[in-house]
Image 1 (tube, one colour):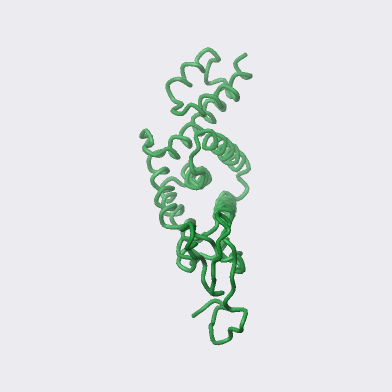
Image 2: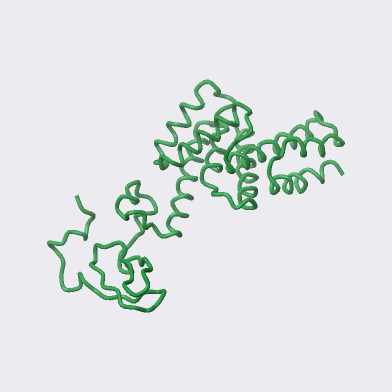
Length: 233
C-alpha cells in the first residue's frame, strides 16, 4: 500500500520536475515519488525538495520508506518525540512518587550535559536515564518493563539494544563499555554523591577522592566540580 499521493495512477504533468543541486547548481530531474537522487555532475545526494518528510518525524516505517535518507533535522525531532514518550511512560509508572521523578529529571539533565561535552549521541543514554528510575522500586520486573516501554514507544531496535546494554552495565555495577554508558554512569554517581552530601553521609573532604575514583569522563569531572564544589566550600 502506497502513501497517499504517491500512487502513479493519479499523477499529472507536474509529477516530473527539475531542481538544482545545492552543491554545484547542476540540474536534477525528479519523479515526485523519489525521496532522493544523485547529481550527475557532482554525485551529491539530494533530497526531493517537493516531498513532505513531516511524517518521518513519527512514523516507525520512515527508514524503509525513505531508504535511510531521513533529513538530520527530522532525525533530531524523532529522537525528541521518543524521549518524550519514554518520559511519559516512566512518569506514569512512578505515579505520585515525586521524589523519584525529581531525581530522575535531575539524572536526565546531568546525562544530557555530559553527553553534550563528550560529543556522544544522546538517544540511548537519555532513554536509559529515564528507565533507570524503574530499577529501584521495581527491580525484579524493571528490565521487562523497560523492554515493554521501548516497544510501545517504537524505539528503533538498535537504540533499544543500546539502552538495555547501558542499563545492564549500570545495574551490574560494571564499568560501562560504551561512551553513552559512561556518561550515564557519571551522571548517576554525581547525583549519588550530591544526595549523600545532603544527607550527611559523606564528609566534604571525601568528595574530591570520590570524583577521582568514580567519574569516568572529562565532562563528568567538570560537571561534578561545578555541582559539588559549592556544597563542600
